Image (cartoon, rainbow, N blue to C red; front, top):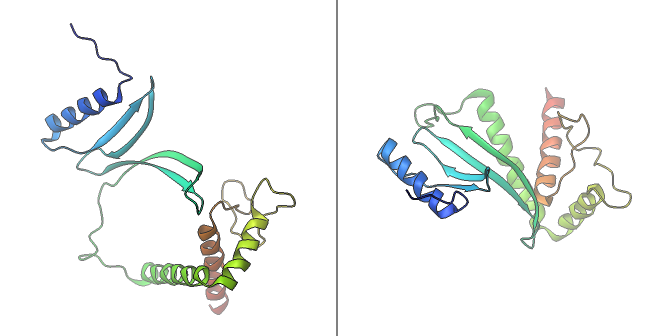
Length: 172
C-alpha cells in the first residue's frame, strides 16, 4: 500500500484537481497548502462560485507590507447586469464611487497635490513619532476609532469619499 506525504503540495494539488474533475466533470484550478493543517488556499473551487482569497498589501516599490486575513466566500446568485441594471440609490452610489476614483487618480498624478497628500498620509501612519489618525478619516465600526491607512491611494480615496459624502448630505 502506497502512503502519500500530505505535506507535498504538488500531490495534494493533483489529488484535488482529480477529485474536482470526478465530481463536476470539469477542472477548476485551486491550490491547497497543507502544513500539516490547511495553511492557505486560493482559487475557485466549484462551478457555483466558491472563491478563496488573501489580500497582499504592498508599498510603491512592491515590497509586501502586510497580509490580509484568509477569506472564503460564496456567490450563490451572481447578478446579471444586462437583465437587472442598477437603478436609483444604487446607481447614484456607483456614480459617486466612479467620481471618487477619478478624482483620486487625478490628484495623485498632480505632483503638488500628491506631496500634500503624502505629508498628510505619513502623519497618520502608525509606529511613527507624533502619529495620530487623520481627523477626517472614517470611523472603524469594530474599534469605534478613526481608521489608519497603510496605502496612500486607499487613504486619498477614503478622504475624497468622505468629503463628497458630507457635501451630498449637506445639500439634502
